Length: 279
Image (cartoon, rainbow, N blue to C red; front, side, top):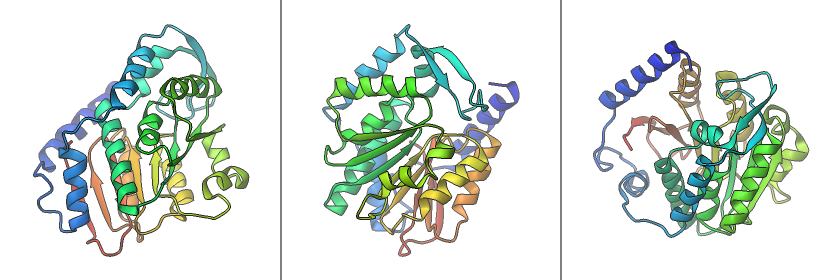
């Protein structure tokens, strides 16, 4: 990471601290969003599967295994060139923080409870599969479709899911810029019944152009109850611009900037507001 990028992230973090609030949800007008924030940020309950997922994280962080990776724009190699890396180095640099995984688990559980049915979840950027595990473990009936560009990374992720006993994840391998627009791959999300996407978690190519292209491709399947999660919205000036563009989209009503990621809501009953919250 360059000194300039590091300085930008530090500035963005300090700015977020001074412009966000931690009020237990007060100030959020929609009752649904109020209780959502209360549950996501302030719920102190611990769930049985979190310990097992974190045990897998620690196993990956200690792994000396070397694998061939292909990085399509996460801040290093953006050309698709193959690179040999240790699993532990990938885990250190690419796995989401435990707190983020737990929050995604709560979000998925809460939305499933409100919808009273299994959810259709799309993840762009599988990495080593830890975040995918949090999304899938919330309800074994949910259908998680995750996209990843590096076959060896997918292999490690599958081992993680097998050890955790997870069977409701489907992987689409290949460069997401190519596999997501592909009609056959996209059918894996849409399915025969063309149901909407309930949760979309975007954590792939961290460039402005790619992020907006992913959003554009998925938003056609968003409905009022859908929640989109854009990861690393303060990763770089490019990602900050992409986030701002999404916030200003006509179909978007409410957004929540939680620094590490942003939540996007589409329900027309919500006030058009952009909240900044601490987690």
